[in-house]
Length: 129
Image (cartoon, rainbow, N blue to C red; front, side, top):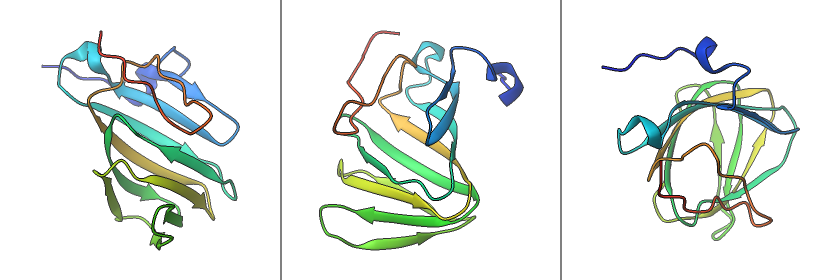
C-alpha cells in the first residue's frame, strides 16, 4: 500500500511550477503503478498548448472553469467542476482557464517527474524509473 498527500510533495522536486500552471506529482513511474497521478492548477486567463504525443491523459476538473480546444478539429468544449476529458488520440489541444482551474490528471505510460514540455508542448517518453 502507498499513501501520499499533497502536503508531502509541496516544495519538493515533485512540485513543478511554470508561469501558467503548477503540477503536484503524487504518483509517478517510480511508484510502480503503471500510471501517474497529478494535481494540476492552471492560472486564470492563460493559454496553454499541449500535445502528449507519447502519453494518454485523462483529466478530471475539480475546481474552476475554462475551455478545451481540440486543435486538430477546432472543436471547443466548456470545462467546469465535474468535467472529464480523455486524450486517447494524442490530440494537440489548448486549455484556456477563465478562472483558476484545478484538475486531477492521470498519465499512461506514467511520467517519471523529469519530463519537460518541448516547444510543441510534448513530454518526451522516459521509460526508466
